[in-house]
Image 1 (cartoon, rainbow over the protein chains, first blue to last red):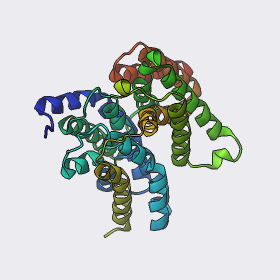
Image 2: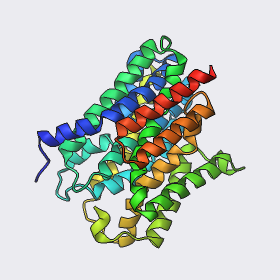
Image 3: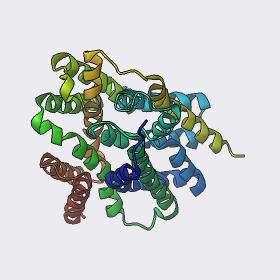
Length: 238
Length: 101
């Protein structure tokens, strides 16, 4: 059973540097918001360390601020973060089938949009040591940014905070766009998902669907259509 | 003990279970070509849907977001690294905003 070496760990750390920087920018904003509703720096950092989910954490603040019910919070997290279940399914196919449960439990902790994006598009098998490098580096940025935002959010100039908001999307784009050059089906998937997402965001009635559900619905529709019309050949499935 | 800690722990447990169940329970290679293809396309669909149109409101001004978006697209299309795409997108938005304020 090969879990990878220290070299894989370092490679994971290096690949996660942009995630780490993007996370510092986004979680910085989370830290500011958390301190605004009266959370202590410790509570904000604990939230980031235990959850590692941007959309989930931001949406939870609203419920915590108005002292909402536990049930509501649980359902909201389930809906917003359900996409991780799809990602976990996809990731399960990248792991060695004999990989022991303990490694699977640790890798699960770090299933986020960004870590997933880097992991699943890595060529060949996914070694746990590589994942651990990704997770350690990314989560460090996520928690560090949260603390920074909670402690010092008000001292940074707004124009700096404003443009940092793009970091996370820049990363998403860097993950998905290169493959659209050589693969028409992926280009169609990316375009279709963006068009549908725009329709869902602005069309009457559809815009009432929460962003978590919106992403799940679009992912299922677009990925299923692509799988039907452009099934992947076995050799290019890696 | 503040109620805030209960909120934090509850959301952590829900979120962790969502992530851990498929990874620990699915231990076979999925044979169905359809499902394999579906899972192959999942990251592209998810990340694309999360990026647009949300990126338009990522900064304080739509115009600086659009400029950052365009820069990111061009760099990513030319296969630049994650870090440079993210950094130059932010820098482009920052410079654009210098002209706006």
